[in-house]
Length: 523
Ligand code: ADP
Image: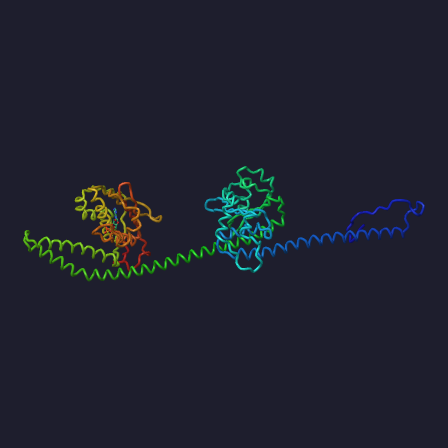
């Protein structure tokens, strides 16, 4: 029985020959051959019809899946919040007129920690809370995803069990970790899962035959989706896995969009904050300019008041009742003069005069000037300067001012405690990977309260009655101009200010307007 070179079988005709044992006649042979051909043709038709039926059934299923995916995709892209997207995705997978699976679980990949963490599980029952009427029709308005339903889904017993699952991405033998690592969908049979250790998530969650698919975004695994049909025991075939894979593709894009939006929002927030800070700085700069000109205007009359008060005090007899008043005027105007000087030096752009200097000489000069303060407050000095310190480049005069400011602060902090110890330690170090020198100035004055730590470098922040709050901001600015760093920590007994100065200044990084005298070739 043959048609188009295709043989379906053989037709054997047995029995008595009508010609008394003679072979079949040529006419009979032709008749039997044509019977064989007819039978083969009928077989061929039957096979074709069966094939056609199969093809149209699978085409129909594919068409159904595609139109379902279209509806699902519309819904997934209707939300821009990650949590809403998780609840919606799993509910759609489980809804009878959606993915039709019985349970769906979501596991999130934490790249930094190298772990996979269960974040949500949805069953037919809990999916029904979000989609009580099944899938909304195409082009219907955005689906509400109320917070209380999200909470109820998360708090449901199955979801809680999912949330307790956590595994190591690189080493776990679980199918979830494998799907995350290989970035491929997996179909897992119940028998396979039973060979896994009892603590594996799928055994803990009593998952039967199931499928896992990764949610990918630009080559990275963001999450792993797992579905099973635990209640019905229905197997998940290759077609269903294909559907799940397409679903995961769409959910991955939606999640990617959500993350992009979050990033854009964060960048926008940063921009707004920076803009506000800039405005604030502009305002501060204006106030600074104003205070500089006021300070300038006040300084001359104040010097005269102080000078005349001194003359008046000197001209009065010691017993004269007016003398103490004249002395007070003199002291207070000196204090105000110092304050005005600080304000002027903070608000004025001081030019740098860069030369090579010996750190030891600068420190010794600052200590010499403050020796009186140290003795008055009964402070012991521990000076430890490494011998191999190189010559540094910078404005020695301004750096001396920094050391004086820090020494005065240390003395003032220790004054109340009745003496103490001031330790100055200088040694070679590194700054941004380049050779540098580190100067630590530590005291035993009790340190700086944690709540104040972030404010001490802010202009006008002071805890002292007669303070200006400008010593540290001025010092900070000078060190910054020297491309160095100032840090402060509290030690067991007091505060420790660490200054790190680069040995060589980066000439190109210095604003030419900051320079008082250009660097000569020798420098
Ligand atoms: P001022 O000395 O005029 O207050 P500063 O800017 O020099 O201004 O210091 C700001 C504040 O930082 C001080 O009022 C003080 O509260 C704190 N501070 C600075 N140095 C020390 C220190 N060595 N120990 C404790 N507190 C300090």
